Amino acid sequence: MNVSSKEIRRQDEQLERAAITLTEGGGGALYQVCSRLKKRGIERRIACAFHEILRDEVEHKDAGARSLVPLIKNEASFRRATEIICEISRQRLRMRNEQFGFPLSSAALVALDQRAKRSIERR
Image (cartoon, rainbow, N blue to C red; front, side, top):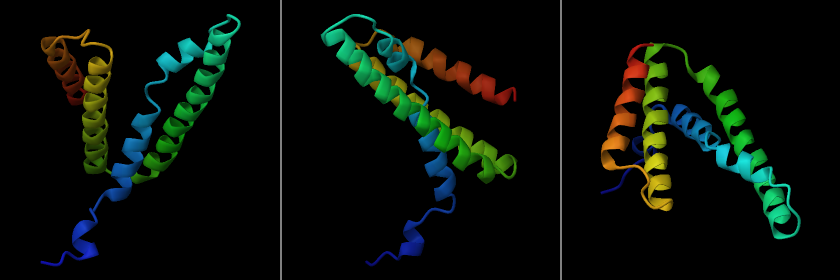
């Protein structure tokens, strides 16, 4: 069975890409803290590396915002962008939780998901 490019292309692909790009710059806190290391030697080198990563992360967020804003034309596009951002953020939170040895329990992750959902619904 052949699949045409029209069938592969999503209707809101630009919106999806912009929303995902926005989330790529959302986790800069770790990089910001590590970029402030003031020690000498290896810690200073680490700080310099984290500073460059932070600049890149912030640019992703800014580029995502610049791309996303003109695509939000109505309530439906806002809702779709919100869904994408929430889903990607949930995935990244679970990835970081695993990366750092599961400091958050499954119940804590579910509670965070529910808080995020309620905050969106209140909008």
